[in-house]
Length: 140
Image (cartoon, rainbow, N blue to C red; front, side, top):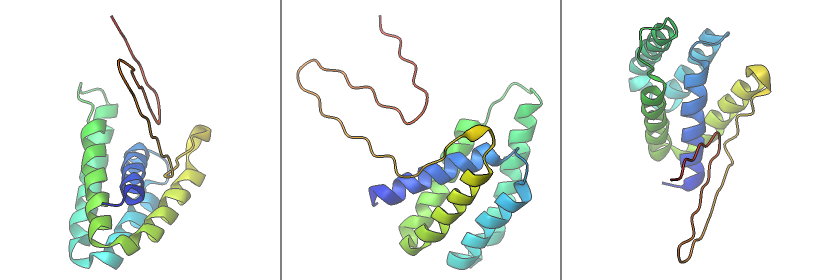
């Protein structure tokens, strides 16, 4: 898969999970379902149900039941977005527009970007650490 599309899928999945419990959830959900209806209409209702199930899981985690499903949900939605873009690369523009809309609505000045590219080369005993967000390294 094209690395740019894969990055977009990752950004969309991560951003979506961050918005599951945010203000404007209905608008977020409707945007995702609209993209699916346009490119994979047969799967739109299933995606809508999964969005609601994801939101419920995120809300339940916020109530302190001990489980934090964020990583699992991110993986699920990144996979769904990647599959959509793999089958319909022309959906990238609409998905990118959706992510940009989410960025404008994001609280706390958080920047959501889909154009991160990292490249590294190591030789010998060199170590490379890269992160697009927080990174914690403990070496012993």
